[in-house]
Amino acid sequence: QVQLVDSGGGLVQAGGSLRLSCAASRMTFRSYVLGWFRQIPGKERELVAAISRNGATSYYANSVKGRFTISRDDAKNTVTLQINGLEPEDTAVYYCAAGFASRYSETLPVEGNYDYWGQGTRVTVST
Image (cartoon, rainbow, N blue to C red; front, side):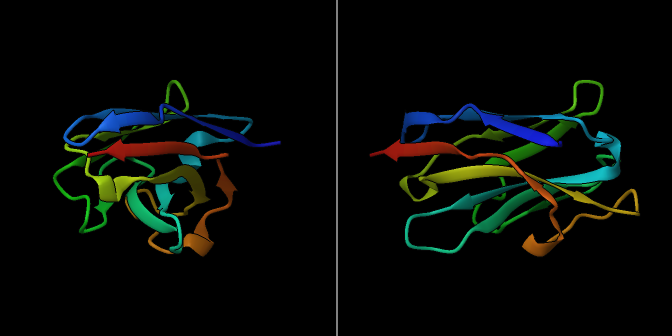
């Protein structure tokens, strides 16, 4: 079955950077919008970034704009989240997700539109 495997989390000091990766298998990767969600303890899971099928459109939550960058590599079936300027408020478990989309340039802002999920990778930001 479809598999998404997240990696790259860890413990980092505030102001530092991390690069999260997600490798997909057993799916037609180009047919999916890819997103990164996070779940902060005690809060609901939220979408922080998404990228369209053709890579031309990206979505970022206001709280991460200018610090997070999402990218996809369809040749390698991977999606990456580059995180710079980490803040303690970014501490969370981060999940990649894939949602089927019929249009090439749309992103999917609603969690319910995502069909497949990674297992999550924990990011902890210390002060």
